[in-house]
Each structure stands twice: as structure tokens, then as C-alpha cells.
Length: 358
Image (tube, rainbow, N blue to C red; front, side, top):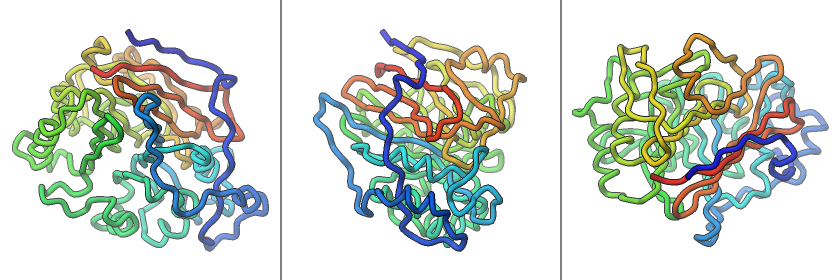
């Protein structure tokens, strides 16, 4: 049986050292930021595989780095409402991570290669070797996502033999992880049963009958945020559900949302979803929106009471913005989660719990 709990900041993770500046950006960093980064990890952070009984620790977040032209950037230090990528990256320091999963929209506004190199890399470069990224919509504001694919290289899986760029899978401990490029699923390019996406996904699930499986992409199928539902991902969702997937991670809306385990989805049209169905943990997929990587916060809508009913935790405030990282400890039969708010904290929000694989 699953045991869920919400707790206050007293039960949160320990304080981590802030991340060091590695590459200078056009805007000069403040003295406070430079001093904070002096205790940074080196550029060769490697995956830490822990004993199976302990489980493997992964970190997850999307919607991350501002461009230096953003007025809130302030030399990389950021401001209360946004551009907090430095503080978010600091939450990774000192953690024994098996993998870091960047959930897309990693470098605003257009995912340019020079800004990936001079900004994103300054904060998250030390974790590049353990990163398993997926692109967001902002990466494709540069034609063909050239900046994103150029920065991450082979880790981004642009050229795949199955014809689905930016989509791939791998194992972390006992878990199978599936990274999906949700930009490929759209009304004009549907991910239906004849698409390369669904053909590959079904084959991958069949080839990896792990008890525990996690999938992640950028655009959430369900969300209370400004972007709302992304109906074109419905066939992907249902394929994963049929394949026994346990956890879904997304971003895109700049806030934090955790949903109850959910069942099969039905799209009414290209922008509208039928009400989601709550299911027992032994049957459904638990889903997150983790768009708290530093850019800014979006508010939550009250226009979707059906989605509200299956939301187990949420936080969004455009004035008291929430930023931070979701940590998941993956063990042989389940997982633990903990949301760690970036410091200095602007709220008392915290979310943690335990889940069991289907």
C-alpha cells in the first residue's frame, strides 16, 4: 500500500553548497554569486551507482536558465520572481546522483548554442556527464533544435536508427527510463499507431520488461497551469499505461504539480481532454509537472475542476515563486520522492512520499 505525506520544511533535505561559475557570461556576475560558486563540484561529476538495497538517486527539473538579456538575470544571481537557475543548480551539489533528467526548456528564450555554452553550462555543466535530457518547445525556436543538439551531443540522441530524434531509453539500477521528445507529437504530426514514435515505444517496452519503468517528456498531458493539457500526447500516454509504466515526469508549466495515479486518457480534440481517472497505485501512473528550474512561475487555473480532483500536491505563485528540484530514489520495487526548494526559500512548501511499482 502506498503511503503519501506532505511535510513542512523541517523534514527537507540538507542544505547543499552552491554551484560554481565555470564559464564567464557577457553580464558580469555579482560578487555574491561568484563567492557562492567557489565551492563548486568539478567538471567531471560521474554517476554514483549505490547498492541495490539503497536505490539510485535521480534529480529532475525543467524550465531552467534565463538569457543574460532578461532583466532578472542580474549576472546569474537572479531575482525573487525568476532567473533562479543558480540556486536551483546548487540543490544538486553534494548529492550522490545516478542521473540528472533535464525536462526541456533548458535555455531561454530560443535555445541558442552560445547561450547553452555561456549560461546553462555555467550552472549545470558539472552535471552534463550524468544528464539524460529531453528538448522542450523553446529548444526548437532555434531551427531543428540545433543549439540543444549541438550542446548535448550524443547524449541528446538526435540521430536514431528508429527515426525518432531526441527519444531514447536506458536503465538506472533496476528501473527502465524512457526519454521522449514531445515536440514530435502535434496535431499536424500525430503520434498514432503508424508513427515511428509509437512503433518504437511499443518495441522498447516489450524489450524491457522491468518491473519498474519511468517515462519523461516536456509537455504535460494534464496540467492546472497556463498551458493546460497537451492532448497530442494521448497515444503516447496510453501506450505507456498499457506497458505498465509507473511514473511520468513533465514540465512546461512553470510550477509544481503532482497527480494521483491515473488511468487511460481520452482526447476530445486537439486541445481538450476528457476528465482524468484516478486509479489505485497498483494500476495507475503517478505524474508530475516540475517546471521549477528557475525561469519564473506561472499561476494555476481554476478552470479544470476535473483535473483539480486528481491533484495531490501543487504550488504556484507568480509573486512568491517556487523553485527547486524533485529527487527520486529508485529501488527494486518502488520509489521515494522529495521536492527540495531552492534557497533562500520563498515558501514553506514541501512534498515527499513513497510509491510502489505496478
